[in-house]
Amino acid sequence: MSDRFESLRIIARQEGLDAIALVPGANFAHLFNKGFHQNERPMMILVPAEGKPSAVVPNLELASFADLSFEGEVFDWRDETGYQSAFDALMQQHKVNTLGVEGQVMRVFVDQALRKSSPSLVISDAQQAIASLRLCKTPADVDAIRHAIAISETALANTIDQVKIGMTERAVESILTQQLFAAGAQDFAFSPIVAASTNSAQPHAHSRTDYQLQAGDALLIDFGARAEGVCADITRTFFIKHCADAHAEIYNTVLAANKAGHAASRPGATAHDIDDATTQVLESSAFADRIRHKTGHGLGRDIHEDPYIMRGNSEILRSGMVFTIEPGLYELSEFGVRIEDDVLITDSGSESLTHFEKSLTLIG
Image (cartoon, rainbow, N blue to C red; front, side, top):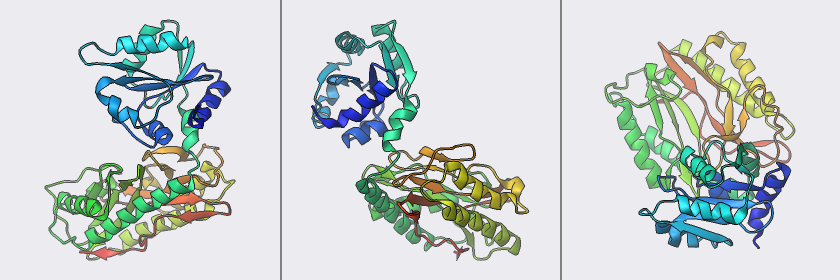
């Protein structure tokens, strides 16, 4: 029997569960190094605390699923007959009373199919325990993240070289998209954010087609490539042609906060410590009322995953953890600045995996 399921069996035993269920997503891809899309056709693997796993698989995915060299029994189903009988057979085989699932990923109709198969089944959220298996990245994981970042930084450099006054945000986004794939991205880590002027004050803005870049505008670009199954996540804020002194003061405050977060990042520190060091710089400035969010989040197969870099999170940082440091200041009627790096905790400190220039930069 393959060792790849043993970590899930250990979690099941530690959590007092009969089994763990996984559906397509980051944890599934981490286990098999291959992903499947979530759609209207449920797919699920069940890993008991002891014994071989089993799976529910749509019949049309059997050939792709076979590439996983799955060790257990597969219960397949067809569109014309529906999936309930496959779940019935799965639960009949395993006699599971308590099941841990991914609370952020499991969908209601899969939950209902399980409960219909086994009305007395107790389902609990084991998301944090399951995701903990991805907290510390392997050297191969880190290399993949480096690759995704290199693609992203190449694309960003090639994009800002083409930015001109009069362009729309959507036009800049289109250039960025083209440059990402030209540089080798397999996909977006998430939909890029390209926002100028007052739109940059919305942390999750959508690019506009009806606003043209003007001299003095802030231009915030938040994006990342997905490559080898992992994500990059980078934000830089530029200024078009010139930057007012008052705007430069805000920019440099965010930059100082970013640097403080880097300086606090080391094994043994907590996620709270990193956010506290970063946010204190913002809070002690004249712009404290412009703070809108925590300092960062974990990064890997998911664009947002543990550890979450926020006050109150006492999770201790360990070698191999990767997360973002992305302080920002935002004034809704004016503009916003965010500077985001991807950081690796090492045995002796930390390393910034992102290298794109952070000092105030004029473009256009």
